[in-house]
Image (cartoon, rainbow, N blue to C red; front, side, top):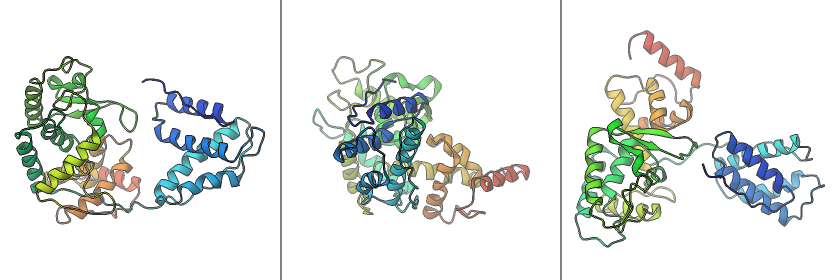
Length: 340
């Protein structure tokens, strides 16, 4: 991974660079931590903080106030990033206040889960749009294959756009997903229907007369002019595709998002496993791998989404607030009883 240079200017700049270097060396993605430290660095300059000065509670609260208009979950995460950095400073001999973290808050946003019929209409609209006349910088060529890949594999949109030609391995029936949110590579499976779609996309892409588009390190998904796709434009086109397919949904600030395909993919995968006779809790480890989560707890959220979208199918024997130990015990008992 390319080394990132951090441009901090406050008296704590050396500590911030060293902290992020240590953070990166542990294989973690420093992007969010770097943003929190950058805003703190700017705040220290604003309040004229000096190197021999106590990093007081007032200085910390002054920085935290900038996050108060955001939701409680975001506030908690930013405070947690800073709390860990301040503890690091104490270990380096810098006098500073160690704050108490705010309440973590609860997730209130509910993503949109597309039905099977809606997904079929989206794909049909994509295919119809691709077959029309398009401009040279259009995303028409890529949308049918891209949206099917997102739904089939559950990868994030930026992960999909980061796929290079060498990452698509038909002989091994998988795609290498690099530089993920958790800063680790993983494999996404290619089933038979997705392989057909991707090969058709490659065949259409080969008609583009631009040098280098088939190089191993070139982007797999490209526009009609041979350049890399833009995630913002894809979001706008996806919303238009949904409208043309008769799918309208407005909830909160976002409405329908491309990221909802990831949530839909996981819920539909869970439904498929449950329909095959598996206990919902026993599906969590497999779903965690499928979604690229670091632990099962992050995947438990999809049990709630699945039960909300398909209450007649998902019937849970434990409350959704049960602990991870309860989930594991439930899975072990199911295996012992031969129900899985």
